[in-house]
Image (cartoon, rainbow, N blue to C red):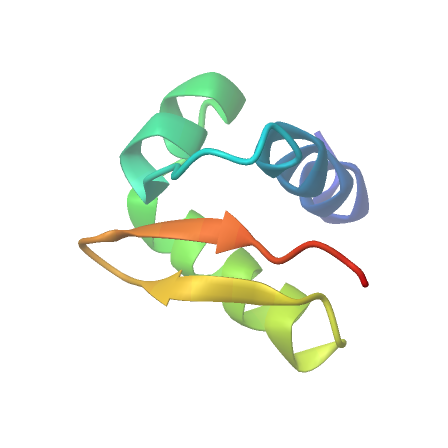
Amino acid sequence: MRRADRLDEIVRQMRGGSLVTARMLGERLAVSDRTIYRDIAALQSSGVRIDGEAGVGYLLRRER
């Protein structure tokens, strides 16, 4: 899977509104936790509103 496709899929997986961990995302996308951490950081730096931290979990903030 290309990185751009994976980033898009991460956002889709997070749209459910519940807390997701890097481990959960990594298992669904067949990549390591570390890859998910890097991808989350890339999404955050590009303006995607993701709250959370490594080891705890992540939430996609809803648009107002």
